[in-house]
Length: 451
Image (cartoon, rainbow, N blue to C red; front, side, top):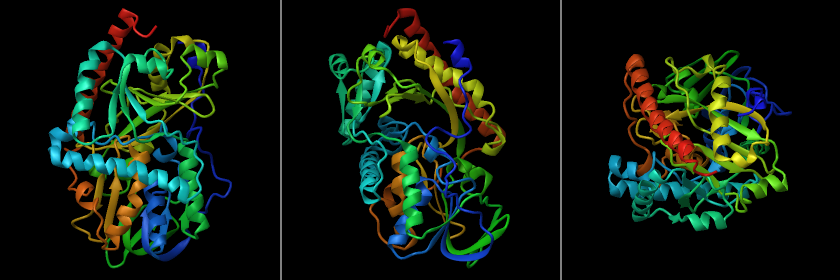
């Protein structure tokens, strides 16, 4: 850790996005649409575009600007990861369902890749795959077993031995690992803003700077905002971790605050000092609360995810300042994994909200109480692929069209206990996983692994 690390600028949003020059005005007055979508991230925009293809008029309401939330703040890994991992999916749902989830996760990656071409989006996509990496030998046996279990379910994965890790030029702190062959890394800001531009070019009405005050159910339903309303036949809640502030199924989501950082660009010498990282594979560590790293097209390193934060009231708008303190956790982890880069400065850090669910799957479907109310939220940190693929699936569901993925991913949301018990349960779980990770990290430091 350096003195400069503590003085690292903390950004209000993320380095990927900024206030659009064509910022759309807030909703003024009362309007009508076929579908109203709450949230202008990957889910909301991909659904609006899919509905537009079908000749259905959708209106998007976004509290800030499209891409302000998790879609524009994430670490930039496009991955077929689903559930916590595939052994967990097998345990929770059985082998047959877990195998279907594997195929769905691959579909999500393919869907995102198709969008890049369909909408002409250049988002620095590196089709490199992502590696779940061992950082201490004690993690290896379990990861090998998990890889074999995943392969048995049909996952496109294979184990990378230490020699191949070095041949790929990966930093030596990452000893060996499991490569998810599908997907890779990308610039999430260019992806989400590309979808925003595609929607505007097609005449889809987007109202930014427009918060939702309340929802009146009826035929049609009505979404109330500070200066107007939208009457529509159907509603899609696509507000992810912010859903607890707006409506259902927010009571089934745990909002977690995740901090990330980006370094200054690496010189040729600095890149060579860590091995070269020629393929720019995304890297996750095999911790319980993983660390993530990727080398960008601009030769910076982006990392984060470690030591996420959870707050008692589950209201994202009331929190954010605490993130400045948590930045040191992810920066310190980077310093330990990349000792050869001790002179590389951290350019900035930022934070954002993700939605976690108790079964580690997104909450997708239709409200049993209100048949015109749809939702897709809670991606558990895997939203680049999953959220951007939801548009076609949700459009088909709203239009009554058969879709093979409905039976796989649309399921009853898992119950969460009320506030005090929820807080105790989540804090207890985070305490356990962080304790396990701290133990591993102490062993790495004591044994000098990766140096």
